[in-house]
Amino acid sequence: MCINLYDTTPNSLIIIQFLQLESVTYLNRGIFVMSKFSELNDRLNEFLKLNTPPVAIKLFKSSEEMKKYVKRRPRNKIALCQMLGQSRYIGRVLGGTAKELDSCALGVAVLGFTDYPEDIAEGKRFKGLYHRNEDISKKVFAETPRFEVGVFEGILSSPLSKSPIEPDLIIFFGNSAQIARIVHGYVYGTGERLVFSTSGETACADAIIPPILTGKPSITLPCNGARILSAVQDSEMIISVPMLSIESIIEGMKKTHEGGIRYPPTFQITYISPQPPVSHFIGMKPPELRE
Image (cartoon, rainbow, N blue to C red):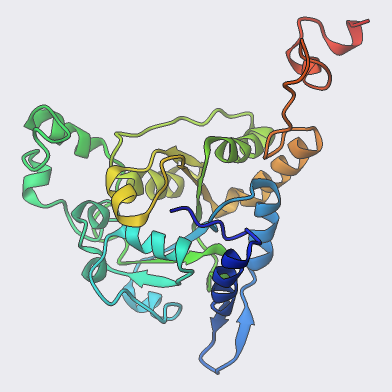
């Protein structure tokens, strides 16, 4: 099931109204205020038209520091991807540590909350499942992005519009055309190609660690666990963007939108041959030399 949080049909409005009740940040003094990131969420969705809100991620070096901003933690042990799913689909602002998130040993390990269990590190657990032999399995996990153990103790996951603190990065779930628009926004101002890296599994590692370590957006495919546990759709990809890059990406999306590069795409399929404006970009001759 795919819930469009920006749909305006009666059933969807019920969902939206429920989430809007939670679209405030509760302060200790008992005052409710709209998150300052609501406007940022709206500006992004003007160009992306996402089915579910972007997810804000904040990492904490100590769990005590996290407590200042997190009023709710998972009641039961869950996986990291499930926490992101609850933020996407239910609108929850959640905090987690190794204690709450160890339903998936891979998720807490890539965050550096713990080490890999011995059988995973030695390549035994996934031998014959994902990997041909133990050596290949060891290689996969040795090359999977991860933080050093002990650098961080806590993580906050929130719909962007409700984030109670400046996030470190924003994770977007969307189809390939929506993800491409974010890439357009990034390339517009940098000229840099984005490098795609994945093993097909442990998508949380590809989504969270590289943007923090490199300062650049990271694209990846949802892993099997995320599809099963957090309702990631068959059509969706993931791109995560460091918060420091988000304004320049929005500017790039705005400028390319003005130039005609949009989502949804402005289809041109009714002509015998490509006509302006697309022909100006793909034709053999530059525009000024055409008749």
